[in-house]
Amino acid sequence: MYNSPVLFDQSDTIVEKFTMQPERRKYLIISDQKKTDVVKHFMNDIEQQVQYESYEINGEADLEKVNEVLILQKMGTQLYIAADWDNAVDIFTAAVEAGFTEEDIQTVIYGPKRRYVYCMKCYRLNEINKEKEAQCSHCDAMMEVGPFFSKVRKGYIGYPFIPVKSF
Image (cartoon, rainbow, N blue to C red; front, side):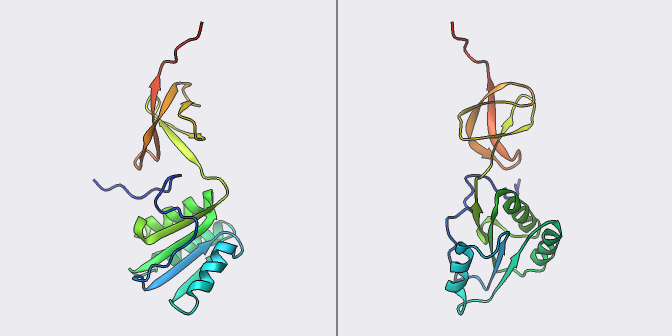
């Protein structure tokens, strides 16, 4: 069974800076902020070497345009996303729906990343920090946050347990 790629806090697609992929025939750069240092530096590096397009998004209308752009890309296009977490997830999801794979995408996240745990008791997602234990905000179950991310559930698996009471 194939599970579509999902952007999560430990994704292989998340990088500190973009790197060139010489086997690619075209680069597509999508950012949600005015040409940040990471994007400017990368564009300077590739300026005369490869064909590229660059798009900036500033809202829902721009995201719809990005969806159209992603769908029209040919195989061999390398996608570079530079955005905050929410916009990066939207762009990443649209790219996967358009046929991009994890190998086709590099992502730089501005600001904090989000992390989710999937409660195995009530089957709901909860946003968490880096803690190893969390309480479900839906059913109040205490969960041990497992080490594995489920692409199907879009979160780390949360194993319910009964906390030991202190006397």
